[in-house]
Image (tube, rainbow, N blue to C red; front, side, top):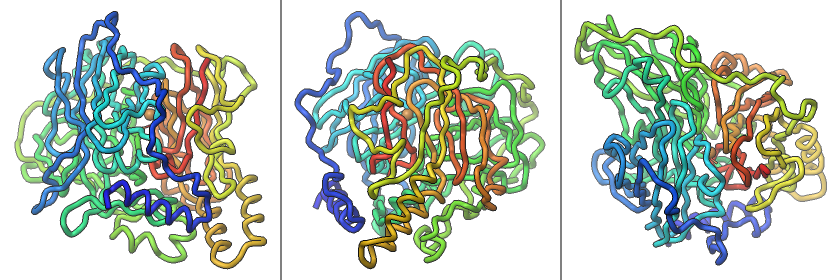
Length: 542
Ligand code: C2O
Ligand code: CU
């Protein structure tokens, strides 16, 4: 049985077990009239031209047998040689772009399943955004052309294929994008070998060193939880450093795992950037919560640390995120071998292997930023809702699951406006369902339903919006929750964001510009298992 058949079969069994309709199964046949962009536009004059191919590869991750992965392989056709940097392992090449550059990417799919690439965090037109409607089949090509409008920062790219995003990203279809601009260059931040990307992911391996993807119902609800941490696609990471300052670009590239980042010796973290790039000034944090798809840039200074000393970046303990089912059965701990959500484990170790005498020092001011306030809202008094809830046995956003081309009236946004968006848990919907779930039907199903209702409101949800990045206006906790105290000082609310972690019971208000481009732009849970289950919607900007 092929991997995909396997996935389909297991998904079928789970959906069947959940009593959901078979119509919810992935359908891998692509429509004939797909609006795919096969050909380059002769009027578009690229500064950088890249070929990116999704294919099967074999890489060495653990000692012993190689691991079969999906991988983006890149080739630079035109532009500065540093525009594309190949890494060892399965991650796609790093695309190093500059603000204002025109970029053309030829994407080739050599996998035996459809695929499409999304440039997460990049502000690009609908046709260039990798909406699942544009998925291409084996042997086809999609041509992306866009201008880099982002500020200096760290973004990424990954598969966004209808209902198989989780499995494709899990198998390796992702890579980093850096953007630089004039403001950043003036700062003299650590660069070259002192500018380190750190993509954090969790995986699970078979005895034969192959990626193992768990499909149990609990894993689908909690999202995939691995038992091995990989950094930049490698296990057991120890990075040699010099006794000076470094810039670390962290991306949580996990499907669902949430990290609470902290240094093992209690040194506070110094953040200089978030999803949307550099902050106005550095922020000192006791720890930082990093949900899937979120980025944070850290300044870490090893100056004065003796030769041979080590500093470990850990995920610290936190509470309030266990589903009732996991708690009651103690399932997660068993399933993840100590890396259950909220457990303490180490991510990457830095070892001082060389002493140097000079180091750049941390600038007190970084870059300027366009600050949004409530005064900027285009239609004051009208808030766009993003309600997290569930109905008819499925998790939803605003009362619905994903429809490829669908949007509702409340999801219509006039172009070139700034909107206030309120993200909240729809408890009405959940308790309503809880009551209905409690009656009528027989035995095991009822327990399952109740379990799911409870779980939904008790797990954190990273919410991601495509298109332009946004700013956080407010966060508030709407109900008693002891666990919240263990995470609440770990949010950076001062920078541009494209993904926000909404803790159980939390309500987050954001301000988001919808400028320049019209069309369909996704918003969804960035736990990829949830996204594939249909917890995704379109905004129609027009
Ligand atoms: Cu990281 Cu819809 O994407
Ligand atoms: Cu995105």
